[in-house]
Each structure stands twice: as C-alpha cells, then as structure tokens.
Length: 358
Ligand code: IPM
Ligand code: MG
Image (cartoon, rainbow, N blue to C red; front, side):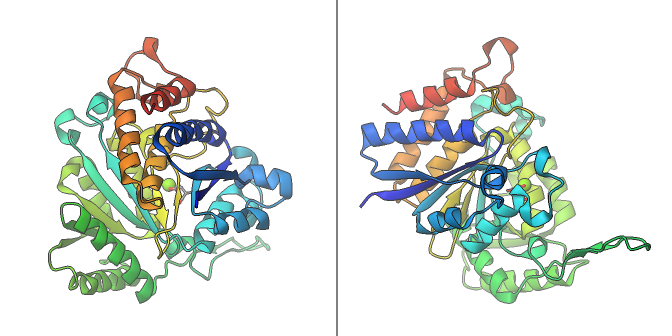
C-alpha cells in the first residue's frame, strides 16, 4: 500500500519550498520506485484566511490519517495582532500537541562546501555534526496556568509556567539516549538546574534513564553555558537533549554554525515514530514570493521523512547525495552565496537536486 504523505505548505515561503519538495518526491517516484500518495491541507495564516482557524478540523483529521507530514512554515506580520489561539503559530503548536510529536530531531551538519558561509572560523566548524533532540509538546510552551492580565487601571502582569512531568522527561530522555546510541554515544543534557526546580527534576530523571544506557557517556550543562560552548567550540558536542524553550533557542544557534538556517531540516516524532518533517527556518515573509528562498532545508526534511517514517534510508541517502552534488556544482541560493553573480533561484536549486535523482 502506498504511504500517504500530507503536504502542509502554510505561509510565506512555505509554498515555494514545498513545490521543490514535490519535485524531489516525483523524481523518486518516477526513477526509484517510491510508492506514495500526496495530499495537501491548509494550515497557519492561509487556513485562518480560508476558514478562520489556523488548524481547521479537516486539516487535523487529514494529518492524523497521513503516514507522514511535510510541513512548510507558518506566520506573517499580518496575523501578529490576532488573538493568540488564532495566530498561525498556534496552528503549528496544536498540530504538534494533537499528534503527540514530542521528539524533535534537529541535526546541524556543516557541508564542507559551505564552510565559508559560517560566521565562525573554519577550524572551529569544519566537520561539524550535531544532533539536537528537543522536547516539543511540553515545558513553558504548553504549561498551565498562563495569562496576560487585562489592563484594568493597574499595571499589567503576565506569566507562563515551565512544567514537566517525570513521564515527559523520561520519554524525551529515552529519545536522546537512543539517538546518541546511533551516533557517537555521547549525550549532553541541557538545563538550568542551578535555578529552576523543573530543571532539577529534568537532571535527576535524565540521570536515572541513563542507567539503562551504560554505553552512553552522559554529561549535563547549564543552558547559558551551552549557548556559549556552541559558539566557542561546537565540535565538543555530539547529541544534545533539552526542553522545549531551550531547544528552540539552541537549535537556532546550531543552525547558524552551519552557515545558514536555510540548510536545516527537522523531524518531529510521536511514540510510534510517526512524524512531521519541517525546515527549521520559518516563513520568512520578507523574501516570500521572490523565488530566492533556499529549498534545501525542506528537501533535507524529505530525506529525514524517507529515513524515519518510510523506512527508505536508501532513498534518504540518495537525496542527501543529490544535495551535496548540487552544492559541488556551485549552486548557491542567496543565503549561502559568496558571490552575487552566481546566485541560484529556488527553482534552479530544487531542479538541480531533482535532476540528480534521475
Ligand atoms: C521552531 C519555531 C516555532 C517554535 C514557532 C514558529 C512556534 O521557532 O520550530 O523552532 O518556537 O517552536
Ligand atoms: Mg525556533
């Protein structure tokens, strides 16, 4: 039976990058026997405009029925003043929560061809290969209570709650250890245990789970230090595991080490390994519709989908090689270029990758 893939392009550059992902999938269907059915659904600002809800019931139902989801990006300035539940980002957060996509894998790999694009010295980042395992359905993003008080004469006040249960920490810790086992067996857990009770529990539980993984060398680091170490000497890390908010921040830092956030894919998995795949970069409304966005983060997200949800690691490698080949041929989108004159469009980059797969 063919695997059902749901495309949720969303807003901003979402459409442009999803178009390139589809070209790659078409090439794999045509030339490599990939057996899939593609469907699409609205999400984010686009869904709000059409149906008044950033995650309409019908989109959620289709997401539940799919074997894997390819997600573009959501958000834009025109929706920033809506009530929070109506904003595009809320559609994404609800999708993650409703589908139980608690384990977010964000690899940061430096392609040797792009070493110049990093803002760090070449020797600091050459060969960089880090995996951040971010908890995605808990912590301060979802913790109750939360509120922004109305200004009824007095000074306004607002608060959120960073909350983790033991069970939530255990399952993401396991995901971290399992990931480390597939890599170089070093796991660094990032928290703020010197200040926060929630981090104290995090550290205790991660340490306990670690007893089941004697082969993995576990270390702990405070998040402020981890941010500093990531730019000071990032190659000391292999796999990192951390909570939702810290993971959000650290993954943007890790992205920039590789030269461009336009290169970074991600996978968000549930307990059965069903997944949603999305580039780490957002909707980039400032460049949307210009045909200049880098489609490689999205295309590399397709590769992660092939590997983690469709059991086609062989095709994932083909896609990753095709990306490397396109870079070897000198194709560079604006975000990774070193010379104005040779800038490739979104379409040229996506087309080059698809051509390599023939
Ligand atoms: C990310 C994004 C999202 C997040 C936003 C768009 C809600 O920044 O996936 O990293 O904060 O998780
Ligand atoms: Mg983010």
